[in-house]
Image 1 (cartoon, rainbow, N blue to C red):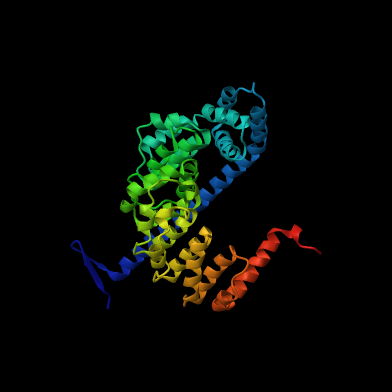
Image 2: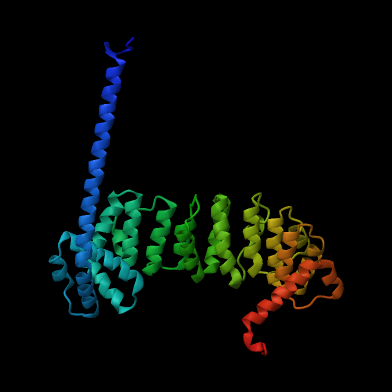
Length: 373
């Protein structure tokens, strides 16, 4: 018995419906197949054309780079669309590899190609990908004026980082604090690795400004962003003098152990500050419930390396119940101390024996001239 399907007031045999559906699907697959084949052939032809002209264009581009009298405008005017694409690809490559006067010549080529003006338009009209692409080109060309002329303000954390990197590479900030504020004031999400690297580069020029901006904003940041800033501070805070570090010590009380760990490591450079040297404060830190955080605290104390810090570290290690954390602590201790009193070394057991030998080997490897054959 033939099944009947009813729809929109019509009754049709199920067999007919299945046949029509099969034909439609088959036709769609055939169209997709030929479109794929056609696109592959087109791309193959384009790649062949690009490869055919690349060597010649590369030679001409290098000639113009090293010849101050070479007229970029005239040369670019004679290029086809494919040739312009190849030249832009080569320009991108060389701007990342060369420096000095040669780069200035290449940036003039970028102007002749109209890249900076196109980038400005992309900032005003494009989506995020196009805006990031435009900011990358403006950074390579060091054209912050096109950024300022555009009706554009960064909308995402990635765009913030890209704008900051453009202005940093172009020496467009009045001072490092301006760049740090651009990255961190009002930030509501974490950076990519590129953004964190940009923060590090700018912060290197003024660690005090970074600490000041962080102190005013850290309470509003999500934990992943706070951890990123703390990691940067870990490498920059050695020269701080009178800056308020209360936000760093407050981060040691956070619920998130990743935040507490990063805060402890960031404090490793400021052990000489009396405001972080209270015995009660240190005793509370080494009692942290997280082995991961205690390991960071032990490294912090070892980095401080004065008698008070090392005494606190030794007492904590003697009572440390987590084997891995004890080993991390004794490794940090071994990097600062060649010897321990016998009773202390005995209390630390195998962890100290291994750490001491490891530190001794490391020092020997770093100073091979001190080893006699």
